[in-house]
Length: 190
Length: 190
DNA sequence: TTGACATTCGGAGCAGCGCTCCGTTTAACT
DNA sequence: AGTTAAACGGAGCGCTGCTCCGAATGTCAA
Image (cartoon, rainbow over all chains, first blue to last red; front, side, top):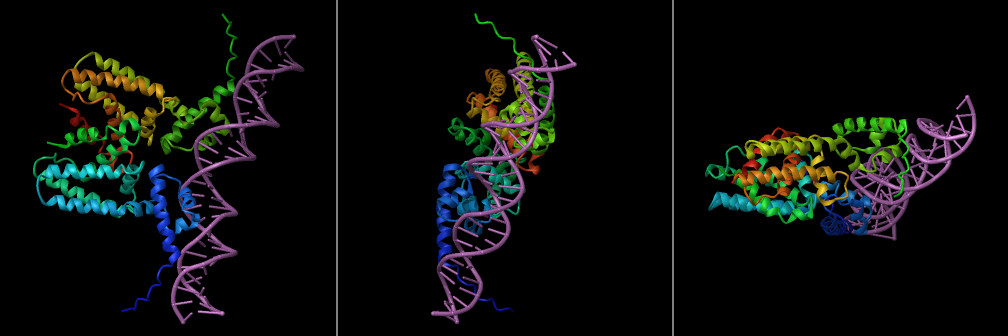
């Protein structure tokens, strides 16, 4: 068995820069959306562009660092809800939370849907885990006879993202999000 | 009353170039989607970039030239359908046609939704006319008690675009379009 | 047919983008 | 203090949308 050579600890400046980049990215992405200029993020973090790309090799990696934890929490939350109570309420509640997450940044629904095409995306893992957790809630609600059996987990993911997508296409539609969410959910019931 | 100075007829080369640009744009947009490179369109049309921009001052103007007629036809079609028969079938059928139109080019749903924000867009007029025609069918179906009264014309437009949007987010979802369309429509019924 | 001229053409140029590459600096360990 | 691997930062590449203007050309009158 090969002895693992003791890995050198990351340099202090590297850690500092990584933190600053994440902070700044959160700001910039909140302002400009998920398609914000990465040059801008580096500039505002007071860091070279090369530094940004070393820490986060592409936009998805940066977003994964910003959103990964939240996705993980959503997956856990689904496990919790799977345990008790009304499966319909569990599914609906969870989806509502998901939609809020997907609406956190303008342009995020596109990014989330892109993980379906691109398994190599850094967001793929956390996103898939979350999607599968949701699929569990869906299956339970279907077993309980509350949701149409011809709805797949991917359908659900797509529709939830679509509702969030609508909300950030026009300011006038943002206020309709909950309403549209209910319309779509009603279409899924038996 | 000022005499309108007889406007010079457009030059033959100008007409020729405009036609060639439209032909080429249809090809390129079919291949690359509504966000295709305009430089590419000009290049493949064998025309300078300046020429493209003189004929079509921005991307929306080019798309309007490509799609305007189809939108007009859809608006007329709504008028026809408004006359006879089952209002629910009329609405559903028309929306299905609309969705096919919105799915004609990858990225088109975004463009259509953008007309809600930007009344100055060259696509705004034809798009609004079409939207209002659809709203007429919606109102009829609501009067007939077939569609929930809390659905607005804008809701309908947004949801239809959202279904088309889903279909072009991942190849695997394109085949689910009709299914998703039905799910959403069912949510709108009383 | 020729000359005049408005119209049209075409592409260089600007500012921005994502991303790579590499010479320079620096933190960390001996 | 000296060595060295790691990290830094920004010039540079090829792309984007869009503007601007000198050169070319179609059209119409003489």
